[in-house]
Image 1 (cartoon, rainbow, N blue to C red):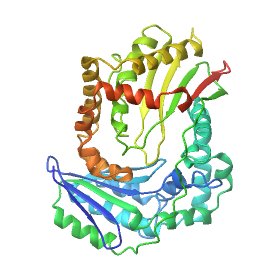
Image 2 (image 1 turned 45 degrees about the horizontal axis):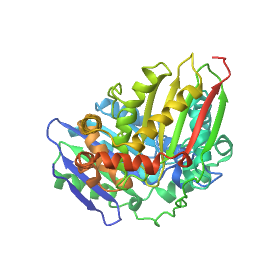
Image 3 (image 1 turned 60 degrees about the vertical axis):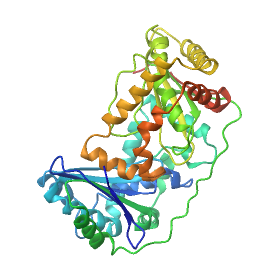
Image 4 (image 1 turned 135 degrees about the vertical axis):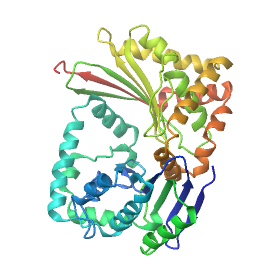
Length: 424
């Protein structure tokens, strides 16, 4: 399906895709800023700024936005990730101008009232405390800190508690002004509109926002580890978790696609799309080896599309009658098996089809189509999305064996165990 990709005079990228299957338009504004752009002492700033974008401008006061969008029959939300922040509204087509006016206004005119900053500090600290009750959050945070010694990928998006307690209104506002500039943004829309008319309206609203200085980036490539690292996290609960996190390639690396198929083969397909649902992983090797034998209650994998090399993680929930070692040994044996012999063509074909199906399920709605227009631009271009299925189809058994040998090595991983204290 054709789409328009252009750039405004202030440097803002615009992607417009007409889809006339329903009278709906989904509008996404992407900013190239996430926890990847936060130095020590300012972790969590990007997520906090996202919260402040819902606290109003002079034109759209706090509390009015939800009412306006709900009254027009739309829904909206926002997300902050390690590489980006995004805001979206999906609206009935005749009402989409509200979303355009809103995002153009708060890109430049959010107020950051001191009392609102103080209120959100309490909210985010409470969110952080809630996360600390999750065993997998605690384990993941400890493992990321060990996996990345210098790269900002080493801290969680929500930020460290000490930084959340000390960051000021001035710190947040400076972060906002530094990164929320049109030349650091991508606007993506899909739905029932006329492209030229919509582009004219986008230019009217967003084209008047002055370009800023190109934001400086602090992230630099970090060399992969040269020896296996171990993490043991203790905390509340009664369940043991095992997670093996391997250094993985960036999303635009050719190996990303055979590693996606390897993930599907080992643990069942995982969704790159944040809106994607799940499909059964009962045909995967590790489900058969760990869950069917009652060594684990569940097992899953996760490969994320990122700007810099991040992590491919395999996570197992250990059976109540088992120990972590009962999971780790067969996990290592299955990895060794794929390293020693490529999968049979039929098994590979099934893994590819499952990964393709999950991708397709997460790409069909108008909201998902608009999501992909912008999301792919965060780490590559929209062509990455367009070629995704065919690049999975091109993966061979030898490719899967090769990436297993290259990436799933003990010296390339952090092995983490969550040890519960036995108290729920």
